[in-house]
Image (tube, rainbow, N blue to C red):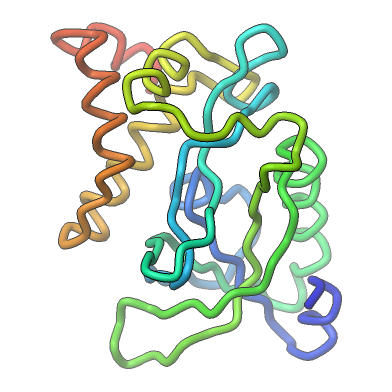
Length: 199
């Protein structure tokens, strides 16, 4: 189902974010819900040569990889009809044109038990993308993140703010991939010397 099909069916749109969108949406929305989607795991396997890196030193950002047993936590934003076109245009530039992501539709399950599942739009980068980097060890990914900076800021900021979101909003969830990379970056900078300068 394409974004336009979702718009034609409803007078609002839900967008699921699992990377920088959880803490920096930068588009108009009515409300947000913390929750998860099933069948995908979040991985720092996608390259970024604009927002968090450049052509010489691409950063590493998250994408979703299919995994029947997994679930990925994040935030779904409700975009009202009055802001739909504007928000989708912004997201298309940010995620598709500059980020190399494509769109999918997923079932989002809110953390609040009083709300049922919602259909949401999500942006996913696949392995056929030219800037897709693929799997690497936590230390290799951390080393790449620690030296990368793009037009939006340092790659370390992206990593730390995502880890912070998980601890604050989903404290019961153990995201081993995310936290192992965070720990590896913090080992590179003992005492957190670089942290204030990138946040």
